[in-house]
Length: 176
Ligand SMILES: [Zn+2]
Image (tube, rainbow, N blue to C red; front, side, top):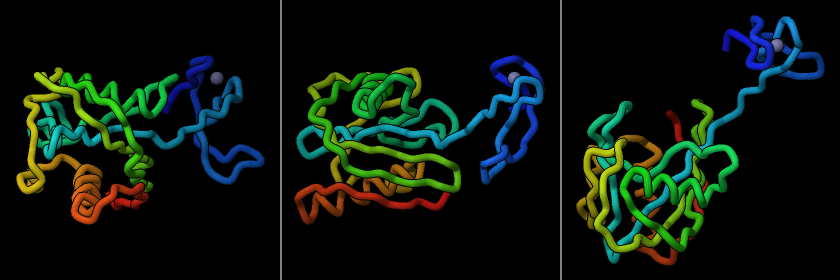
C-alpha cells in the first residue's frame, strides 16, 4: 500500500502506539490500514460416486485442475460464496453444503473453508475462469495436474473419509 484510501496522502509502515506489529498508517489523517488474511471458500461437488473438477483458464496454474473455489466476497456468507464459485466456474448448482475442512496457509495469510456438496444434474458449463469441467471417479483424480496444495489436501482428506466413512470435519495446516 502506498496511499491512504481515505484521503489519498502517503502512508508509512510503522507500529501504531498500543499495537505490536507494523501497519500502514496515513501521514495526513492518521488512519491505520489493517491488512488481514483472505478467506477462500469452495466445495467438493459430488454427483453419484464422482466429483466435479474445473480446469483453470486463468493464471496462476493455468491448465491445472481445481475444485471450484475463490475469495469470499464482502457481505457474503461462506455457504453463499462456495455455491457462487461452483456456479461461476462450472455452471454447477450445489445444495446440502456440509462443512468439511479448514486449511490454514499462514505463510501467505490465506484460510480455505471447504464444503462437501451435492451437485444438481448438469449440463455443467465452464465459466470464463475454466477451460473445461469434468466429473472424476476417485481413482481417476489427476493428482499430478492439480492446481494447488490446498486442493490436493482437500481431496486427500476426502478420499480418507470416503474409505473409512463417515465424513468428518478437518483442520489442517499447509506450508506454501
Ligand atoms: Zn489518510
